[in-house]
Image (cartoon, rainbow over all chains, first blue to last red; front, side, top):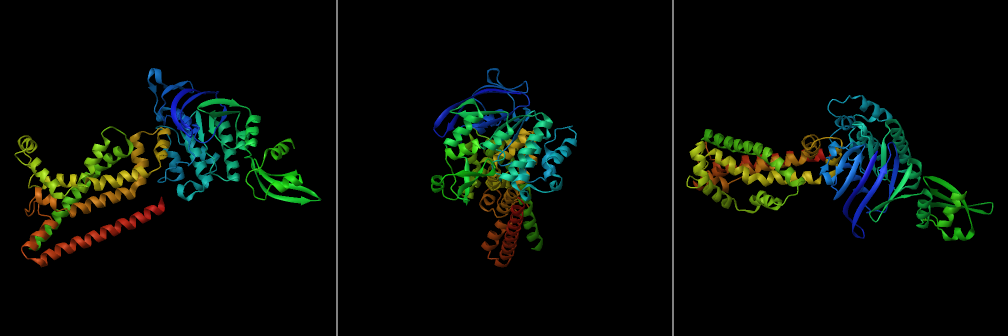
Length: 284
Length: 224
């Protein structure tokens, strides 16, 4: 479990704001955290991991006090039962895949966990390779496995998949779900991708103006749709006098019937499409 | 003559090796402190470390001569309690060289550490690893080119140093007479042939060592 009530001043896009984050994650929960860039999502994860110092507040990680400013308790990152996966992987360039993982072993810890994680994340063929010879997806698999070697109870994923292509991303999501199940992890993950959020999480939290609030999926969908940032028209095709738009949405290619007016409005390759088409696709 | 020639060169390299080894022990931790910590007096420390870059060597040598001399409290204290004389001795040259070449070790290592992504260390901390273990197993191995650059620059800079040595060491064969001093001395006595031999050794040595560094760094960059 993870219980947070922390305050920290941060410099957001609109000037200095107070991050006043209160959230509770039950044991084994998989919670998504969304919010605009610069809203403090990464800062919040760093506060939990102990990499950034809070102004005041309390953080309970798995019933252990990680931070309690009133009692002057502030556990170092080393002592918190928290694993973190960075967006840019942060693999150690001087170590092979296996060395990256064995480095994370704690003194006296059995090496079997390394082999187990290598197997789950299917890294067997890559164990002697150095990070600079791996693709983004492979590196992220290593980072994920490495973060779990010392068996943290809580895993933080900071846009861990955002730099990957759709196919790799989908596979990584499966790995994460598998690891979540196997190790009963409590996971907090930052993501902007709706399909990812829907697929992975039990709950969605949004960070706005320094405050966290719980949001319903429908709300996110609507908000996103009104921001018109949901899909990409690949092409408009005509079949038997009917017009269709092929839209890449939620990580898959969908074909949606559209009117002549709509077809005229959207040019092939346009990045954003508007609300009514999305509504239609959701209804269908 | 030949034995004096080799004695002078040996002394020069001995001074450079000892200085570089000491600088490794002092400069690398200092570079780590400067790259990773923020404290009130950091600019003062940084300025002190970089001072030899801008100061004429004779100025540094002059102050060291005053400080190490028997009439200063430091010089007198060292002499009285440790029976240690630093002016016109090899030990004094080593200390002077360490101070003089400090920025050549600290700056490359510091910038190497600062250029590493900060989340390498953070990832290591969150894996439960101490600062010391992170420093030796994650940070240092990933700045090998900077370490090599620092070591070679310190070494070469010490070999080529003149002003500081002339001020605090003088020209005592077998004790403080290094190659750069010998060249000056031989030219003064119009002994150009010997001056040329010293100069040629230093020239070839400097060229080879720089070439080795660049070759290694090119390879290291390809790996990282």
